[in-house]
Length: 334
Image (cartoon, rainbow, N blue to C red; front, side, top):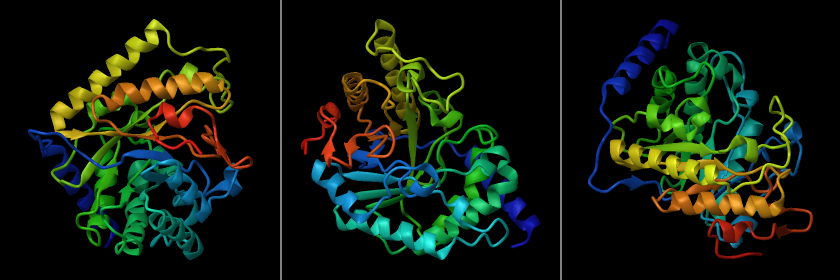
């Protein structure tokens, strides 16, 4: 396909998705996520630090009572920068082996494209590359069970990638996936880092197997207190549970209900959590409040994260941190 043909295809797909009306339903549909946890940045532990992901982690996650694992994968840094944007076969084998380890341990698996700064900065210039990556991923995983392995095209669209150009950017990737995976669940979030507010700008296609997501780290001055990658660094000491906090989460639930009414689909929370600089008792309080609020309207959530960041599990002591699993309704505390 020439560059010109690709641009015309992107424009056609953008028009298709922009003009289609969101599907409605008498009973809202949802992806069967259940209890879910992210593996953080464990695939890229060499770059981000922390424990390297291995097959035993999926057994630990499943035995704790989780149903689904979301595996953030940095495809862009493991693929050539020029067409045909070939993914490093060693990396492809590693990611595939982790997907299979999740399946072998009875988990559903979400695999995403997690870190792609060039795409966020210049979506049009990287649309073709994103589609080429998903063409390869889709072909590699096409024979995995569609009921248990789900694709998330891009994590937290932001900066240049926003609601206005979202489908022009991800539409070709969806088409590439559909060439080998015609009815596999595919997950999408809108711009602004897929915050709960972004649900108002998230339009869905008539593809019945496209499913909505959002992320929830509100209020940021609580969940990210002491986080040095935020500028300015939110100060330590923010306590959760104020009258304002309760009003905010209640208002955010109403935003989700409005989205469900508009689209007929229930979104799930792909990431939520509080950084480990927050006292554990406060993290427990936060997770409990968020879980109760959104579960009441049928919203599942994937906790951020297992052991490397926003820690739920101490891989050195081999114990789940006290109180966090009960706070999110997971049955077993091991």
